Amino acid sequence: MDHGRRQDERSAALWERAPGPVAYRVCRENISRLIEAHPDAEGETVPACPEWTVRDLLAHVVEGCQSRYRSLGIRSQPPRPTDGLGAAELLAEWARLAPDVE
Image (cartoon, rainbow, N blue to C red; front, side):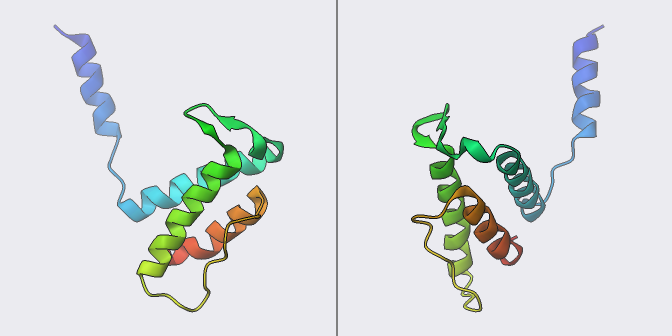
């Protein structure tokens, strides 16, 4: 009897695939909480992206949200340029635009 396989099947049954908008929102919320809990980390290097800081990576993710926002043709609250924004401002921008993108 293969107990490992049976355990894997039980574990897989506990995981249900979330719809894309839900998964995006949960990731955004988790990333936001992580950065808010470590406000001094925005200048730290990201191990998986050694050329980027936490702030750079956050700006990149926010710019992706902004791109999607623009592609939806929403004009009520135009995205802000991310240049010069700190982590707190980037998180605020992401939170402002995300409901229309999610």
